[in-house]
Length: 351
Image (tube, rainbow, N blue to C red; front, side, top):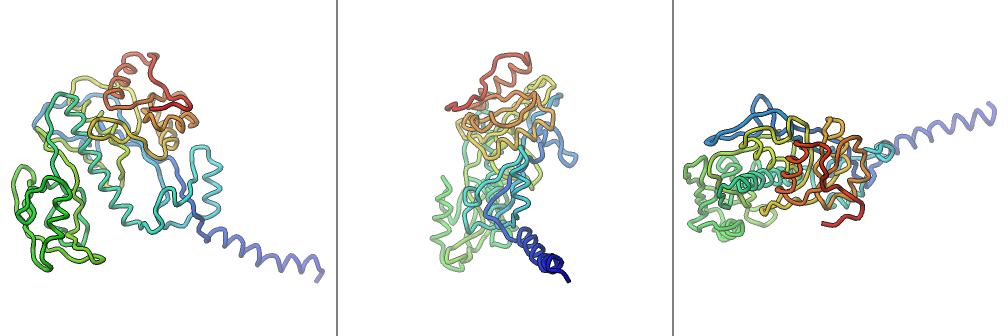
């Protein structure tokens, strides 16, 4: 056997080992890819996504599409080839792991956090839309999540309005925590809740989790609406970034005519109780997803404009928005005249 042949034979295991290392060695990065888009004015599993009972609705044409991002999950293995592929794709992104997740965050914790944010964003969006329409809404304390396998599972439900806990009136989420912390060990607590217009009472016995008393709920701010409005979306979609699109869709459903003029509008942005639009992650990937969905207009949170201007938007217009009201006006103006001058994203813009 010649030296060249011998060297080739000896190199094969080394090359195989290097390839295996590249495939199986996790790297401290998170990848972002364009995700699906959902027309919130449409249906999911045969049911309208925006559901209203007790008020007249208007189901017209046009689309308001929320946008999503596929993000590698906490503690997922992201290998060299996946990182290189994301770097090479102009629509993808690679970020340091610790800029997205805390070092000890688990998939389950991330899922619960996303579900809580989704419920909160939906309720805030509905409240913002109804306020814009002149309705009065009242803040309440409600259940934002129920942890599977903990004492409240099967007894309390998401969006239960918390009225009393152990005889203590509930004015904010801290009151719930205080009532649970003050409960004697092993003693059931009486929860009084408002559910579907009815007052219910149930007993929940706290348990110790890492030394703390828990019943397994996340309490937070909700709203008492003048009639029933809900947003029913696939549970796999989490996070707060669709708040703006939820609000616009509720507004469109409760007003005659098509808000978009029969066209496709996409966008993103969190929404707070004052109707202010907040920044989100992955705006470039969301713009790419909207571009592929043939949207003509994309609503960009003002704080994301610097990132948005570098995204491949094709013929889709990028409109800078700071509030739900400014987004509403921009969509209405664009629907009437697609060449109208609108606030646009520019580099180094400030909110």
